[in-house]
Length: 115
Length: 230
Image 1: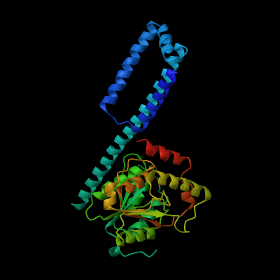
Image 2: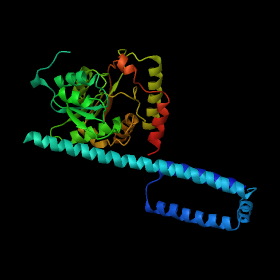
Image 3: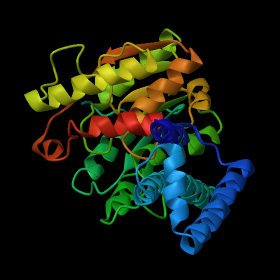
Image 4: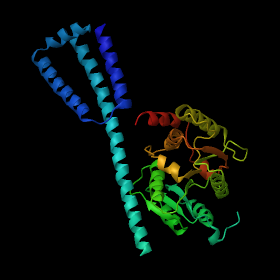
C-alpha cells in the first residue's frame, strides 16, 4: 500500500534528522514550506471535509480521519526530534558562553596576581 | 606518602580536577596533590556547597563555572586554561572524590615522559588492588565493551578519571559531551588522533563515600545515545 511506504519513509527521515541534521538555512526553508503547506491543506480540509477522504483513497488509507491521525503522529514525531536538536544546540551555546566567562575571569585574576 | 619539599614539586604537569559538590573530601585530595604538583587547577562546576572555597584554601587554582554544566565541560574548561599557560607539558586529570592515588599519577607521568607516550589511561583492572563490587564490575564491563565498539581502542577500563595527557594530545581533544559520556568521547577523539597510548594499572579506592555515588547500568544506554546523537 502506498501509505505504508510514505509512512515508513517519514519515520526513516525522522531518524536521519535526529542523527545527522546540521543547522542550515535550507532546512529552515523546508520547515517553513512544510508549515505553509500544512496550513493550506488544513484550510482545504476545513472548507471541504470530503477532501481528506479523497486523498486518503489515493494513498490507500480507508478514511480521511485515519489520514489526519497518521499525519498528526508523524508531525508530532518531527516536532519532538526538532526540539531535541534545538535543545542540544542551546546547551552547546550555554556551555561556550559559561566557559568563556570562566576563562576570562581566570585570566583577569591571573593578570592581577602578577601585577 | 612521603611529602616532597616544595622545591621538588612537579612544575610542568598541570593537574585538572573537575569539582562538583565534594566538600567532604576535596580538601584532603587537593592537599595531597599540592604536595607533589605546583599547579593544581580545580574547575568548580557550579557547586552549591563550599567545595570551591575549600579547594582554594587547600592551595588549588580554582576556576568557577557560573552554572552546573557537567564533568566533561569542566574538564574541557581546565584543558583550555592549561593550554594558555607557558611551560605546560602534560595535563593530569584527577577525580575530586578521593578515588585516585597521587603516587599512581606520578608514576604514570614519569613513564609518559620516559617512553614519550602521549596518552596514559589509568586502569583499575590491570592488577588486583582495586576491589569494585559485583554490580560495579558489571557496569564497567558493559562500558568497556561499548567504548571498544565505538572507538576501536582496546582499553580494559573505560571510565577511569586518572589520565596523563601530553599537550599534543590536549590539542586534539575537544569535549562536547558535558555529562558523563565525555569519558568515552575522550577515548574516541584520542583514538582518531592516532597518538601513542598505554594503559597503566592504578588503584581505585572504593570508600563508603564513593560507593554512594557510582553509575548505573542503564546509564550506559545514555552514553551510547549521547555519542550517536550530537
